[in-house]
Image (cartoon, rainbow, N blue to C red; front, side, top):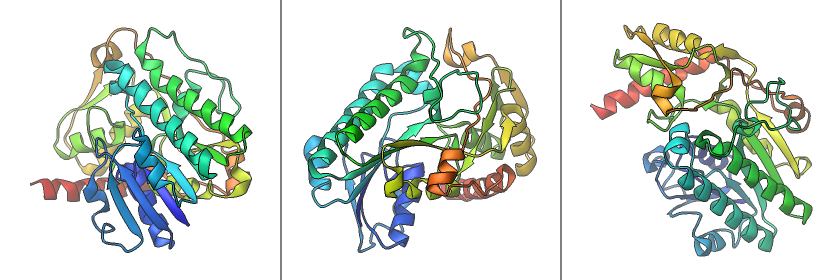
Length: 324
């Protein structure tokens, strides 16, 4: 197939591009490199079936050109991260909503299937677990910026379902705490790369809140298998959880990473207010129901947390050597 991947130079996107090329598809990668890195695709840049375009998917003319001969688009480009939500909610809202609207409008004109990357954040602070794709959304007040990402991603999903009702083949995938090689440590990134980077430097690992928050981290290989499985026609018009059932607390995660890296790093508690400002909330537990994904996508996570962390730490160690 002719496939477009937006955000294809990012953490998940670059792994997806590699796998699609390896399967024999022709891939056009679109990324503005605001979060992505061209070096993640350096081995695939000269591939005869790969075209890389540096640009933004808020550029309608660019999207129109990319979708001209496309069979499918994986829309992964997004503005994300808790720190972005707290500091610049307008950037998060406009960056996500505008790009998704343009992708869907242009895909509809050409009947190009869309696989939209959403997030487990859409469930908010619903206390009824595990989260099913039909679970209610429970969010805080709109004057608390922390909820803007969950809100705009949910609105993106509403757009996807609306276009599905108009006949566009659309599938939504909700990622649960994806991690692995190429997820890099930044103030706006995930907790695992942040912990690994600190541990390799023997610096403190800062645990926000109580550290008792429970999460199901999903290794990138499982994420990519589930994402590609969303191509199948049976998945059209549906949302799917892509996660794992291997739960851990954030403090337990920190302790495991310190152990696996043989680090001397201390683990330091930091109040949420100090990290993100007054009024920040977090979910005590986030657990997916994978029944629908298993039945329709054939999805089953196979990588346990320790195995995934060992592979991820090895990648970060190589990165550290390159940086030096």
